[in-house]
Amino acid sequence: MPLLLTGQAFRRDLEANGCLAVQAPLEGGAETRLLRRLRGAGYSTRMTSARGLGDPEVFLTQKHGIRPPHLGHQSVGRGAAVGEVQEVAPQLGDLFESDAPVALWLLEGQVLSRSELLSLCDLCKREPRLRIIVEMGGARSLKWEPMTTYLKA
Image (spheres, one colour):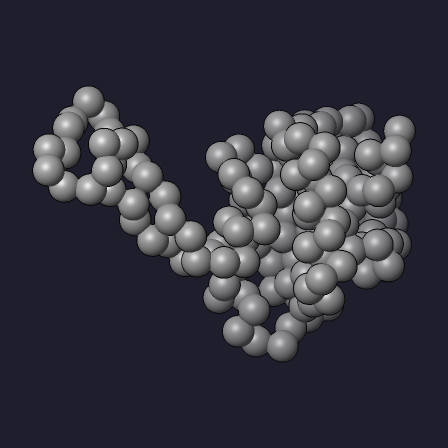
């Protein structure tokens, strides 16, 4: 398996396309090997789940508000009826502080809608240092293709 030894073809495709759709073996391990290869090539990396992402661009790159679950408690007289808004830092904010390229691996990408996947592709075009790998399901062997090609199929 020369792919897992070097990761050169994966990195070339990632740099050429910006956003990749990946189908990885369900046993795991392939994603961490590839992320380790990317870190060795100078990338700052982060792995997170696509579940609960909301608006991908805002969640990943901008300061935004969240409302925690109320858990049955009422806040009478304070904040909105649905709870107080808490400000949180962007998921990738600290990675953009350096000049290194940034690679984000999104697990469970099959829960994202077509428009959310397209917004991830647009985000990669607007931010030239950002590369996004979206895991779109499982396969017997590691396969990837550009996200735009995946969405056309």
